[in-house]
Length: 85
Image (tube, rainbow, N blue to C red; front, top):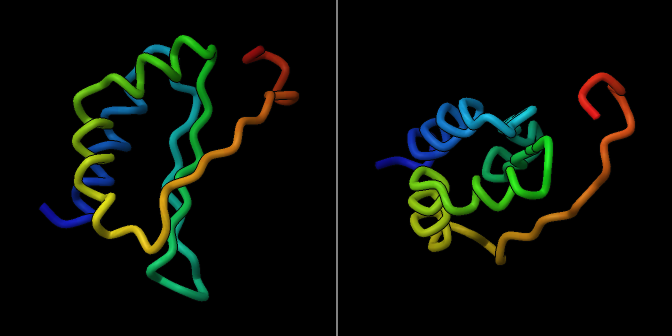
C-alpha cells in the first residue's frame, strides 16, 4: 500500500473515533516529501484509544521505514473553540 493510501485510511478511520475532534493531513508546499498530521482529541483517554487502534498501528508500523527522522509529537491544550472543552 502506498503512503498516501495508508495515511488516507488512517485519517478516514481516525475521524470516526468518538473522541476525535480533528485529524488533518498537511503536505508542505516547499517540500512535498514533508507532512504534518494535526490531531485533536477530546480527552487523553481518546488519544490512548487512538494509539491502540488497528488503523493507527498499521500506519505507524508501515511508515517508520519512510521517515527521514523518527516521528515526534507535541501536546497542546485546546483554548478555543470553547464549546469543545
